[in-house]
Image 1: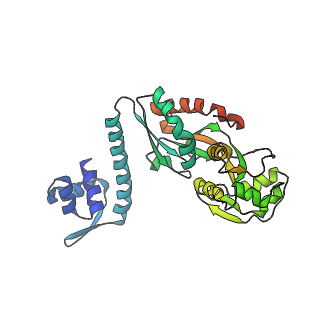
Image 2 (image 1 turned 90 degrees about the horizontal axis):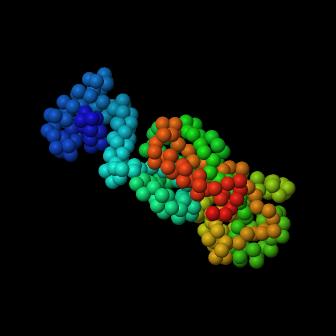
Image 3 (image 1 turned 45 degrees about the vertical axis):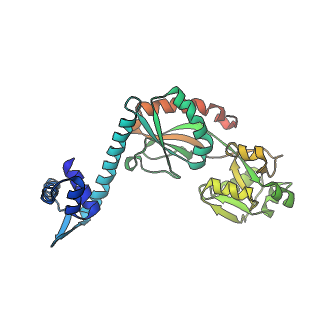
Length: 296
């Protein structure tokens, strides 16, 4: 570990002298540690030029891996110190699902499992669990994530939603009428509108509108009267109740999304106690949403 810490500091600071100062060692001690590490690895990690050093190509790649590993060790140590009895769960969440659905329910989990800490981070797409300090993730999509196990949580229904002013202005009566207003598209769901029109036996060839990479931004644009957004009904209950958003065609049946919500985790974390506790609680919390239900 001492060799790796000396290497990480030297790589980050591009200086044995600066690394020595940070680690409270002498410059010669750091230099000897780097030499010892290079001898173990059988290759040069630094290019030494007069009084300066810079990472070699091999050293650059190795530094990225070592830095990530040391950060993970540091986070694990910090998590243990703050909660030595219960452990912690590093959970990747989808932004709107996390803020609208999960966060308000977390006090129930903490009440049932007071010793466990949950650390939340935002991820919009799949990632490699081997390269991230994450124990589990909320996934929306098809039941496929390479290298991970998946557990079904809930499905969702989507509705065309817009501001009351947009409804008054366009007087929607049937699905084709929505084309009078700009359609707001989510980058993560590029075919959502096409599938929705198809479910209404309505074939459309041109669906112009705006593209958003965040659910919250698309919803806010719909509230502002920019156009009509196709949104999960359970995530916009607050806006529907307040009247900021209305269903553009309330007489039509709600359409279930082809994708669903899952909890994903790497095989190496299957028996991790905080994850087991969270999985059990999450299954109970999402019970009312299974099979297309929309009640909490």
